[in-house]
Length: 112
Length: 114
Image (cartoon, rainbow over all chains, first blue to last red; front, side, top):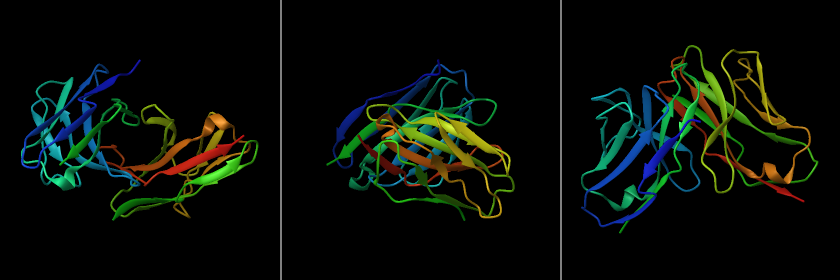
């Protein structure tokens, strides 16, 4: 069974603070993604990675960094959290045949 | 640009009625789009419902169907008779040929009344 787990599931952060969202997959997938979802809207791609130690910018990378230290782990880093980054963040891995995304449960971030 | 537009929710239907959730896409930089429907049931994570990678083909799952229409750039989701357990949020998505980038619609909440 494909599995993507995210931590923390929920977090309250202060403006200007550093936030790290972690994602771990046991699918043996090469590709991993970080998406952001704002209430009432779809998912927007922040960063993705297709191999360890390499990351690529998505559609809305500003204010975010990503780290892929191993095939299994992919982190999203907010160095200076801002109010506008309040959202739900989803991590996903993509099966190596190219078609299906497997999502984590999401991490709800509130910046105050 | 590349984008997806789908029926704005919530959509409310009664059990055993038919359903259609519209999805149209724009794929200006994608030569061979792949199309997907994902679903989030209450309390669960987002998961794939069905996918079609070839224009003209139909995908189906759990009684839902969607046909990839390249001429109308559409991928509407249909079901002949919905059940209360179909209540969920449905997302249409567009992928490039390699699916490095997948674009999601805003989601359509479906509420099925008993």
